[in-house]
Image (cartoon, rainbow, N blue to C red; front, side):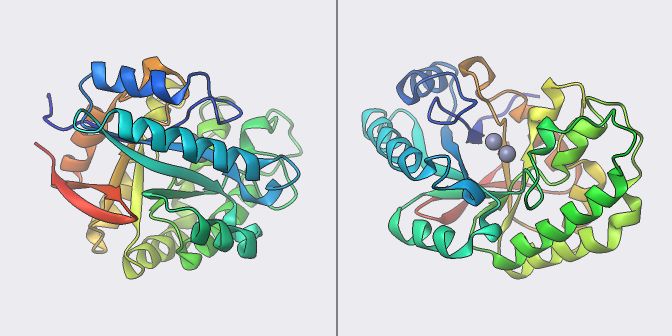
Length: 272
Ligand SMILES: [Zn+2]
Ligand SMILES: [Zn+2]
């Protein structure tokens, strides 16, 4: 299926420590690929904000995206975004940042548990690691994040599975967590926050969209209306990657519209 409006609301520039291309180059690529809108959402890991100089990153990233937004005006909608990692581990600084920076769109994510490294760096082949325990803590932290509710879209719910299952082939049954997942989804609905459909899993060994169909269907069933779709691109060639597959899954789960954010306000665009 081909779609009229490809909108990618989760991408990283070289202002992210794991990004590779400049904001201008990415904007040009997004335009050439025919995207309707793109949000650049560089990493700001709030639990290490000053230690890892994310305060400087935030300003540099914002400034470069604002420049691109003007340069591409009338050609491509560029949203000034940020992906806040673990904002609930450092609430005062996160809240101050959001007051200071006039973002269009903010993703809230959990990449690590308190005082632990990113799930990306954990060696799950170590038999002493209890995946179920880590997942239990992960979902509790995501629930805290949802309740904090000062973001626009919840990033890549079930993120650890990308590594546990995708990279290490662990078989994990998340049905055990259906209660807390319901609570997360209900909190998003109550707070009028979006759930992200993150297509990066399709490019990795995980092979699935994050979160998977069952969670997206459940969100719809519980009354969820707001969804955003993002590739989580860290390279120009991945801009817009599998957004069409994200749309197909959204339609399959009963969603007919996706949200795009400007000035922290969603506009619903029909998936067509
Ligand atoms: Zn992330
Ligand atoms: Zn990301």
